[in-house]
Length: 305
Image (tube, rainbow, N blue to C red):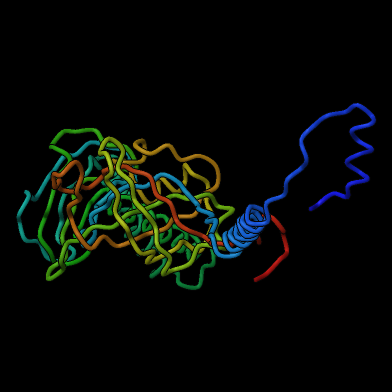
């Protein structure tokens, strides 16, 4: 018996009736072990479950193994010397911009140079003649460089892949004139990602990044980080430098960014049980895992397990 008879008689005399509390040892033991297992489970989850931190930003697919020939000055195409598929040699002229004014100035300076050179040969000791000739040499070199800047030449032997302009077309600085695949080079593809500049110290070569393509359900590609830009630059400068005129308006890049490159090992991706080809200029979204910490370390800053 759990309660003494005296206690039961006293309760009856007070006029309060009720049932006697019954404690089941089996239920208590079960509850104890359930609570203990719950506490152990929560502790294990806090210690071993990982919370990852990511750096994310816009990205674009770019073809590698080819060289883009870009205009550095505005002008009109007056001569297009090559066509797609044509082999070219290093320093071969590919195209020209209108250069009538620049060429006329160079001819005038050449004529003036010959006149000043004759004067110098007649009076080599005259400091004014020598100074005038020296200044003219500098002007003539600048004029020659101006004419050359309006002539596009092949940087290496190769094959013309694409031509993006036509005779008589007006081009602006940054416009891609054509592209050349280097002799013996193999074309490939890479992902250029533009991530927040504040994450630069934690982004390293060898990390994994996930490239996601919007509009394709479940489509993503795992890529290894192959290169990270040494400096953090403004978004508009990064677009002009890495994307050029063709793609700089296709990505929403703002603020300070670091540029990350990953090499694609395949030129296709899968989505909705279909296989699709990747193309130069396809835009997407990239996430790079910066670090993974346990739940306990996240809840208690400064704790290291």
